[in-house]
Amino acid sequence: MSDENNNSKKSKKGQINIELDEKVAEGTYSNLAIINHSVSEFVVDFVSIMPGTPKSKVKSRIILTPQHAKRLLKALGENVHRFEKAHGEIKDYDQPPIPLNFGPTGQA
Image 1 (cartoon, one colour):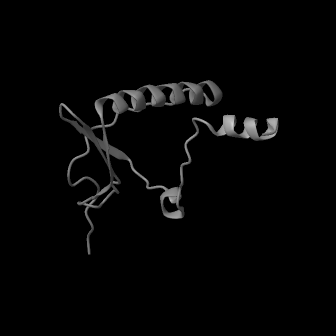
Image 2 (cartoon, rainbow, N blue to C red):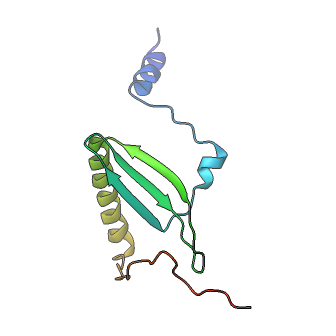
């Protein structure tokens, strides 16, 4: 077997092939995450709430083990740090709690 074949096998060892279909690649907008947990899992519901809309639906639900939730927390922290290093501090504005029927109501 040639060295070239050995190197290509070595470079592929430990790699994971991840597919991303077009629909998932489009992403889903969320401006609210609701997090619940039990002894065995963390459940993160992503919601998109729009002004003047009295009702919203969960757009995506991700269920994680506690270990993966902690890894996600660490990865997000590291990425926010790198982002702020490159682009400046992300401002965290205090927002009042979102009431269930927030936004103006329509008038005829």
